Amino acid sequence: MTSRLALKNISKRYPAVVANDGVDLTVQPGEIHAVLGENGAGKSTLMKIIYGVTAPDSGQVFWDGQEIHVSSPAAARQLGIGMVFQHFSLFDTLTVTENIALGLPQGTRLDELERRIADTANEYGLDLEPSRHVHTLSVGECQRVEIVRALLGRPRLLILDEPTSVLTPQAVGKLFDTLRQLASEGCSILYISHKLDEIRALCHTCTVMRGGKVTGVCKPGEQTEASLSRLMIGAEPPVVTHRPAPPREKLLSVHQLSLGKAHPFATELSNISFDVHAGEILGIAGVSGNGQQELLAVLSGEDTRADPNAVWFDGQAVGRRSAAWRRARGMAFVPEERLGRGAVPELSLAQNILLSHQDNSTIRRGFIRKGEISRLAGEIIERFGVKAAGPQAQAGSLSGGNLQKYIIGREVTRRPKALLVAQPTWGVDVGAAAQIRSELLALRDAGCALLIISEELDELFQVSDRLIVIAKGRVSPAIKTAEADLDLIGQWMSGLWAGSAATESAHV
Image (cartoon, rainbow, N blue to C red; front, side, top):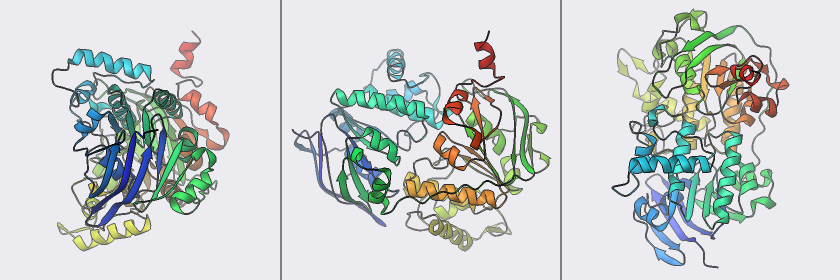
């Protein structure tokens, strides 16, 4: 059988790193082929070469047995190659439909395209509103836009870079059904993920990369998660130990928080109340787009429209206080968007320190202490195993997982009183995910109050002391993690808990 795609001896070098070193990869028609490797192994660079974003320094690319040179993403799409990037390529000020239209021929009618988008989204179970502006979408919803955009082109090869990193388990199941259907119709799929259980359940073949080289090819269904981990990082992932600890005083409290929409597509928050204690991790589960963004904006001080007494931090009413005021008093936060919100891509890692470390150690008498911010950046790089050229490397040059490790490290090293984190291990490999979770637990043990918003239910069950669920701008009662199970949390994610509006309407 003629392969759909074959890469021969592909190499790509950058000034500080060899991203790909003599890589061979073969994908057959109708095959779901995983590419597995730790952060910085060269997976995303290889995918960008296939999609025409980056040109290889050497090597050959074959498509249906014929050597080709993919000069641009437009040329890749003409061949029938579609790609869903880990970092989204969407314009915030345009609608979903307008963003998708940018990659289509001129003259495409937007009203017809909107119908196609809605039909495709419904066909594959991806909830999407074509008329919404992208800046109003959560990360999970942006991921759906990218997937639908790729599916609209009816690709012969679909590249998915961490497609489930912010999808719920229910959405992941629907996506897998979609991918299996596409494969049965002859579409080849290149699937990048750090989730070993997904690769074992979905993929026919797996190519493992480490340090820019291929270290093995296997059938993942015949492997265990432990054996895949050994192939990927040379060891089994570290064990994360969660030890119960009695909570201390309340550090962060929300009292009957209700807030109208900041824009037409926002989620209205309604009568939200919960507490987070020192030495506790409170996990918030929920389907993307149910008010997580809006709640985090209120808690962090990005949105100061709340009643002053609706949010309390360290004994003070802070509903109208700015993000800078809260940071200065010991609050830290990690947004779900890494580039543009969590870090400035054009600035160095050292310069990005100043987004959160603004005190006498980094700024003195109005002058930035460049040596100190470089030292801090270097410590984070070393402690969290960030693969980067050094403190002066641009944030935008890091792989998604390595940038996430750096941002988490930047906030953890502040030793905050309270830490708000959205999607803490989005796009990081199993070893790094275990390290991040261990660091969050260590921060909890040191007395920090942590609020973690995640669509990784396994992660929430692993690190949280208590859980709440957010659905349609309302929150469930809190439950001790030891007393919860996946079925209950899944039911609550649909808004069905005792006393909820959805439950009451179901009984009418």
